Image 1 (cartoon, one colour):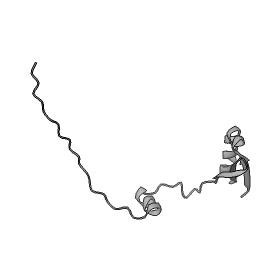
Image 2 (cartoon, rainbow, N blue to C red):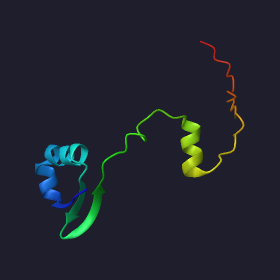
Image 3 (cartoon, helix red, strand yellow):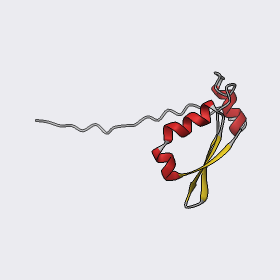
Image 4 (cartoon, rainbow, N blue to C red):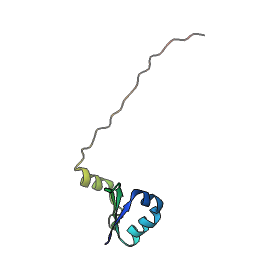
Length: 84
């Protein structure tokens, strides 16, 4: 894996070419703005792309989430007597 440094303006001009090199050549690209690194573009793993259960993913990133009770909010309207 090669690491490539590009400026933000170069990424703007050559976005498709840079993304293709990341995807097909598995290069890591670091985006810099005024010489300071602001973003890192890395190739995605194919096994991450497979379908998984959303609750498993949420549990992995956020821990075990509690089941929240269903909240039903009713709105009461005042009835007015309108005569025409």
